Image (tube, rainbow, N blue to C red; front, side, top):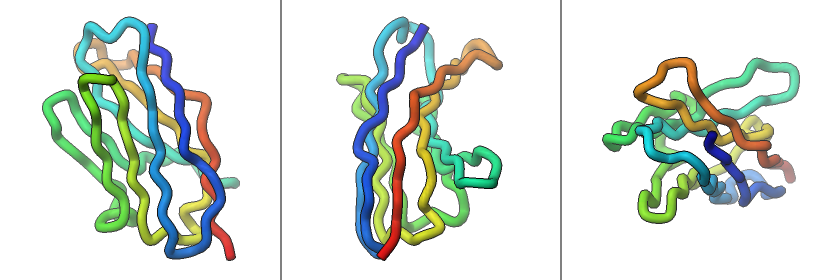
Length: 118
């Protein structure tokens, strides 16, 4: 089992910045792709950004150039640096760990709210 705890959400004005953190603990012996997802009210869960164990990175088109995913492998923390935030980025953001050796096995955090409004 892997436990994920997100932090760093909050309220910010349009154009502002936030950094989300996801601390992983538990059984981390496998290789994981770490991802950030979000659920906008009334819409489906969507992938925002992910980073594989080998460092490969993928972003949702709408956040390219504004969001950056990074990881601290020593401390098992994944970050999502969000700049130039827009009202449409308002959502509940979740951290996800997907086992690269066992497709279908993944873990989720509890979510952290990001609200962008003036």
